[in-house]
Image (cartoon, one colour):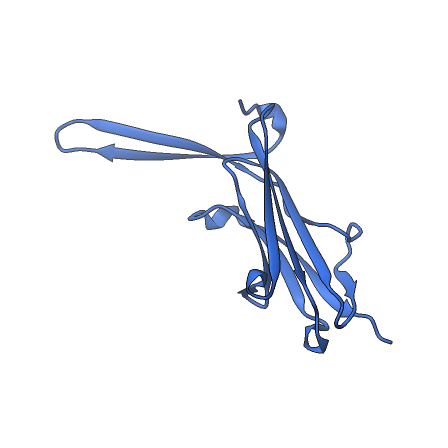
Length: 144
């Protein structure tokens, strides 16, 4: 059961279907806005992550406390990072408050062209653009 004490943003959607035969159907569902995604391996307020050309780099992003289960995806210049290499998703359901946590991890090997590239992690619900939240990080390659 979701409680107001969860201190989340709640959105209630109602769909009213009125038939000409006087049958009325009302459908409603509740969405709990998840937290803004957090990027692991960065300090609070940091906007960069260090990497080395030719060495595998792991980007991990988590969005907590959504209902129903939210989608979390990494993007690079508008293209999903999953097209680049190895990505995995982990979803966890907290039965005590019926909320979901979602984590998306991608591993790739940066090249010199990736230096200065911005990556962003986006948490969203299909067909609900007003509930999209994202965090971004800029990759800075180590200079040798």
